[in-house]
Length: 461
Image 1: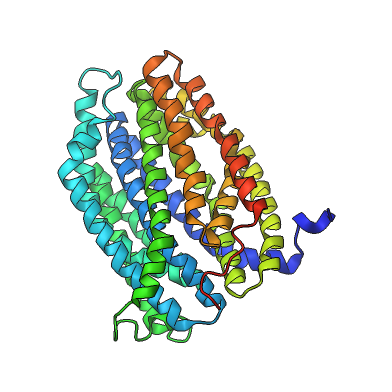
Image 2: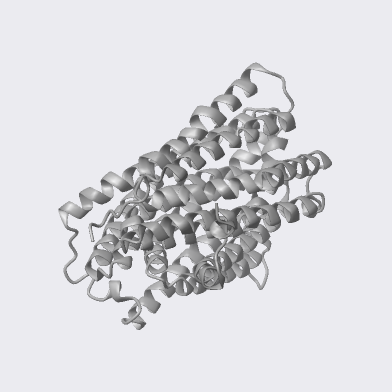
C-alpha cells in the first residue's frame, strides 16, 4: 500500500478545512457558551444544575432528531449540488422545512403532556432528603420554557444545513455566533437579575436560549434574502412550494432510517444515562459537568465528520467514485489524529474543570473520572464518527442505523441495563465497561467502509 494513501496534499487539506473550520468555529462557540451557561446555572446550586441537565436530556434527543431529519434530505442536497442541479437543491430544502416543522410540533406536544414521567425516570437513585423534589421542580420549570425554541430551531436547521451542503458554511457560523452571544448576555442578565432585570434562575436560562434561537433564524433568513447569487436555492423557493412526489419518496426511503437512527441513538444514550443515574443523583450531577465539556472538546472531530459527509457526498454526486474512495482513507486518518490531540488535552484538564462548580467533592471527583474515560476513547469516537459520515454520504442509511443506534441498543444499553439492575458494580467501573464496547463499533465501521458499498450516486446524474 502506498504510504500517501492515508494522507492528502496541501490542496486536499485546504479544501477539507475550508468546510470544516466554519462548522467547528460555530460548534465550538456554541458549546463554549453552553459551557458558560452551565457554569452560571451551576453557581445557583446542585439541584438547579441537575434539573436543567435532566431537561436537556430530552432537548438532546430532539436536536439529534432534527439533525437526522435534515441530514436525510442533506444527502441528496450535497449530491444535487455536486451535479449542478439547482432545482434539486431547492426541492430538498422545501422538504426539510416541512418535515422538521412537523417533527417540532410532535416533540413539543410529547414533552408537554409526558414531562412528569420523563423527568421522573432520573429521580429513582439515592438522593438527600428533598433533593429529588427540588430537582424535579427546576427540571419542569426549564422544560416548559425551552419547548418554545423547537420550531425556530427546526427552520434554522433547514437553512443552516442547506447552506453548508452548498459550500456556504460561513453564514450559519456567523448566525450561530451572534445567537450564542445573545444567549450568553441574556443568561447573565436573567439568571442573576442584572441591569435591573428580575432574578429568574433556571427560567432565565431557558428564556435566553429561546430568544437566541429566533435571533439565529432571523440572521440566516436575512443573509439568504440579501445574497441571491450565493443562496440560489432560496430564490423563488416559496413561489411554487411543491415537492416532487418521487423525490419525497426517495428522501423518505433514505432519510427516515437516518432520522430514526438519530432518534434511537440519542434515546438509547438517554436510557444508558438513566441506568447510570440509578447509582444516585450525584452521578447525574457529575455527568452534567463531564458532558458539558465533552461536547465542547469533541466539536473538533464532529465538525470533521460533517465536512466528510459534504465532501464525499459531492464527489459521489459528481460521479467521482475512485476519488471518493481514496479521500475516505485520508479523512479517517485526519479524524483519528484530531481525536487523539483533543483526548490528550481533555485528560490534562479533567482534574481542573470540576473545581469550577459549586458542588460537593464527590460530584467533582466523579466528573473528573468520567472525563478521563471519555478522553481515553476519543480517538475511537473520532474514527467511528468519520466512518458513519462516509457510509451515510452514499445513502446507506440502513447500515448507518445498524452501526450507530443498533450498536447503542444491542450492546451499550443492554450492558448498562444489566449492570445497573443486577450488580453492585460502582459507577466508574460501570462506565469503563460500557464505554469499552466502543471497539465493536470501530470494527463495524471499518468493515463497511472497506467493503465500499457506499460508493453510489443516488441522484442519478
